[in-house]
Image 1 (cartoon, rainbow, N blue to C red):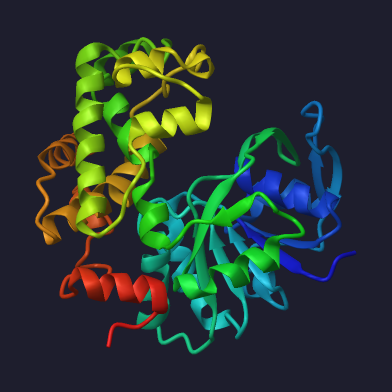
Image 2: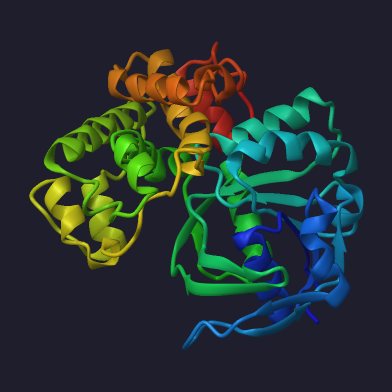
Length: 368
């Protein structure tokens, strides 16, 4: 048994897969879920069965050290806390964890979406958490996985390289070293502004869902999301959103990857424009659309991805009219105010900072 002890927060598709995989690698793992019913079978069995996912994918029974709905018990005496929850739950879990965190612990968000580590850190500060903990975030989730039953999970793919950044970035290497035995796939993501502004889900997910909302509701998602849903006009909207994201990043001194560059990097896919490149990506064929508009592509990606990027744009003088339009449409469809619910610079405590102050904070952890 290796020495690093992990807690995995969340028993959805990703959390169950990560907990089982870590256990199979010989680590002590505590699994937390706020609702006891969701983890009752796992607790009774004492672990999770990772079904055979094919060559090079781990499988077998991962025996867990603890399975609990008590957050204090879950994170007690562990070095690394893996938060595998929708980013819309990050604020709640930060509040729940705050009184129980100890010096030296690492909290890693999988993924942070946009400004996840900044939000988590602000909540710990606001709740007067005295512990010297390191907050970090991954740019994307390392697994493609699903839950195969109450105590079963299935990993289809493990990504080969996932950028990660700590807040401040001077602590990134500390996090990489701590998890290297389990996850050598993580690499230095520069800082949390880089990981957050290279969030491609912010560009693809809300736009493709909202601009095809009639089709989703009439077919219950029975069409190819990235193929049938990306017509030339939809692709033009994606290009506008992507240009806004890259421009916001540029205003903060960051060279963000464009969507075309990301498609080339992730899938080795080329095209004259986004419409052509997306249709040239074989992996997108066969992926169905969400069955309903009550989906994380809206209730998570709008407030936790689009809103913070747009809010940074407004604060630092970048036109983000495309993003603002989608945020408004999503708010109307869901009868909620996603701008108010989302991660704005005001809510994150960044509204008075200059670019140089924000940059210094994410890199060094101080402004003065």
